[in-house]
Structures are given as structure tokens and as C-alpha cells.
Amino acid sequence: MTGTRGARLIQKVSSTRAFARFAPHVVPVLDRTVHRLTRGKVLPSARMLPGLVLTVPGARSGRLRVTPLACMPEGESESTWILVGSNFGRTGHPAWTANLLARPDEAVISWRGRDIPVRARLLEGAEREEVWRVALTFWPPYAAYQARVERQIRLFRLERR
Image (cartoon, rainbow, N blue to C red; front, side, top):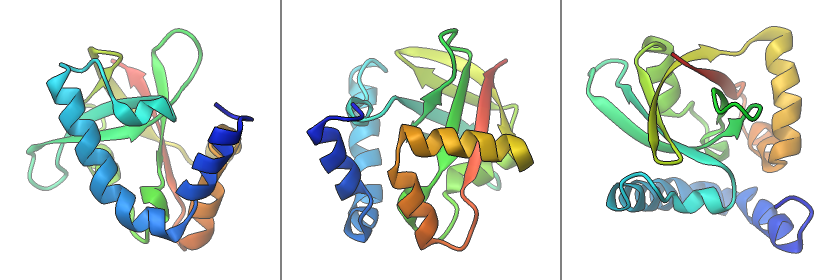
């Protein structure tokens, strides 16, 4: 999608504060509903970016939490994915990041209609910086999200268990 007029427009719109206010209330609900109705075959937001559905127990409650997310698949093997905890450039870390920190070995993703058990690892230091550069190339609005917040956006690598 990068390089097309439509992609640039979507990136520009998704970089705005207005988008950050309404998108978290609309995009995940739509994704979850359509994903459930199509038995994991369709994820509407994946028309813009690759997407998956993360299921992980809540950090405090232990109840399963289901969250549709954009992702960056690494390589062709479909065994590693990067998740960016941008929260659409909103102030706090998204709840799913706390869940992964608390229960990194209990996550499952729905990827292209298949459920895959994964292990999550928070990226730090030089490894994080390298992946962050790739993320900014992959989806330039992440730079606008980071500029709006004082926290460092969390990056996770998910690997098949």
C-alpha cells in the first residue's frame, strides 16, 4: 500500500489527534465482530496493514482478552510477528501490552484464520531501536504517535511456541 495516493491519505488521517480519539472505539469493535462472524477469516483493518487477533489472559483478572491489532510479520515463515503498542498515539500504554508483560507465554494469535500459540518478548535497547526504524518505514504514522506521548512506545516480538 505504501507509495499510493490512498495509502498516503490513510496515513495522514491516522496520524491526527481526531483519529486517535475515535479509532480506538470503532476499529477494534468492528474487527472483533467481523473476525468472530467469519470464524477468523476476515479482519477489516488488515486491508490497510497486516493484522492479527491477540488472545492473552488479563494481567490482573486472568480473564481472556481478545484484541485485534496491526502487526509486522517478519520473514516469509509466518513464525514471528512484531506488535507496536502505539495506542493510536494516546497517553497510556494499551492494556494488551501489560497483559503480554505479565503472561508472555500464554498468548495465542489468530493469523489468517489459524490459531497459533506464541511467546511474547518486550524489545529493548539496540534491538528495539532497529525494529523501531523498520516500524517507521512500515507505517510512518508511528512517528506522529510517538511525538504526542512522553512514554516510549512498547514493541513486542511474538514467536511461535
